Image 1 (cartoon, helix red, strand yellow):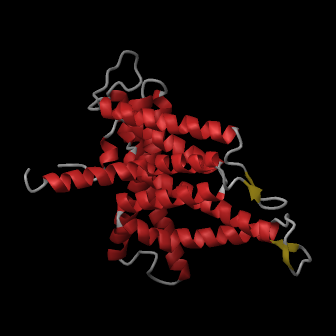
Image 2 (tube, rainbow, N blue to C red; image 1 turned 60 degrees about the vertical axis):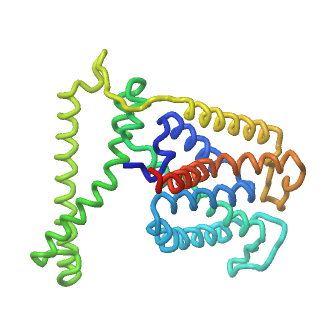
Image 3 (cartoon, rainbow, N blue to C red; image 1 turned 180 degrees about the horizontal axis):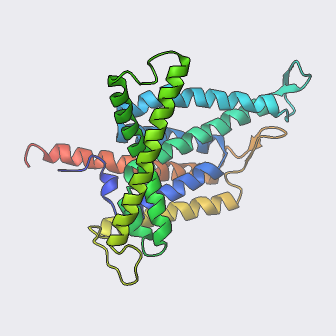
Length: 298
């Protein structure tokens, strides 16, 4: 059965290189255009991977988080020369602090969206495949950590449903009873997590994980397509890094808004950054069209 996300079928080195570049750029570049490009691409790719669930999640949690983060900065940061009003404390409310708060909020939300895409594409077996021989203990711990969160949530729902059947859920009884029931569920989940960790450690030890000379089964093969995509990502990363070093993506928020917005060089950096961020989605949509075209004759 064909994988819905064609980019996930690429070599793990290609997947990891892509997410390393886009996450690094999203956390470094505070240029408004770069922030909007990264936000639009991460949101679109997240919706493509997770469907309507990602859209509901973005509206229910990400939008309030964005607004909250954008409002916090002007309350504590009063830098800037464009004074809009004065707060009750006497501190000025500046336009620059508001815009910087919005930019910081967009960056935070964008990174969260990129990590949601990372979790969907870079599975634990891919990470262990890449770093299992270099850093076996750390790669195992990291992959287990990423895998633990969804498993813990799923197990918590099972335990909560079981407790609800006997009237001991957090929705049953008064405040003290709810607290008691919640602590019981937390105790059950803690015990489950510890037992699961011990079983996993015993299982990995019995399989000889980390021993010298141990071989590992792998189904990944680096082909010509992977080489082209990896070369494209690396070329985009080098060009963007060179452009940033040449101040082509320069932007400052304090004391006044100032930065590069025009010019062919800056425009070319925006185009390359857009191509980098949207590459997996374009690749997936292209593959979907191929499968749709070949479907009736297959």
